[in-house]
Image 1: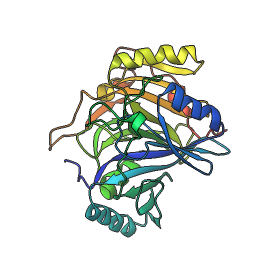
Image 2: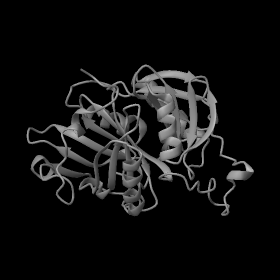
Image 3: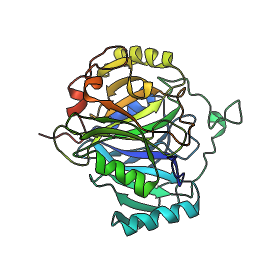
Length: 315
């Protein structure tokens, strides 16, 4: 089945860090995001081609992790429908005033405890003169700083149980599964879900620690695979820990690189833009345990920390 299209896309995330200055350095100087305002202990940051006020809200905190994932609805009517469904299912928290650039916002949680915010009203970014792009169909000028990631791409959550959360995204948010992993015993160990023609927007991965509400990673898209190769050298020169990659995933065929930002959160650079789901009758691709044991697309084995490292840390 095709997605319902009541949710347009992932708008932004609020990321928590116990190292606010170092994390800010990482996202601005290394990743190439642009600061677009502050509010208390939070800094609003944006990639150069996301059209909204911010892509990332970076908040100083006692530990790392994700506080909230924001989803923009496709209309006010679509937002109202999702709120009604979430309320009826007992997953809603209620309305709040939105953050900078965002209108009225509705809060909800998935079965694992991850918090979402849904909104429709959004302030389109108006760059100051020094950030005005040469091409009017681009949100801001290319910064030419660090990796220069283009947009926020997806969020991958760790969950004690994967399938109930996939059902939440499908039944209450209107997403659909594009690919998944089913273990020999029948349990779904991971699911990739999308809201539009991108092959995935949200991912749920089984948390081998059995914990709830943790983050696996947030991902930023680059223009090309070569940008990710260049990024690996930038990370190397700046003493940023590279967990695994550059390489190519078998699932979704995404070229990738995983690093830890100074606050401990896992960040992915990805180049998934060549693969779209255009079929309205797409059937989920299910990978077996034996197929996944082969590792990534070109044979790189999935490292153990992939299933255990998450934020906030446990143990």
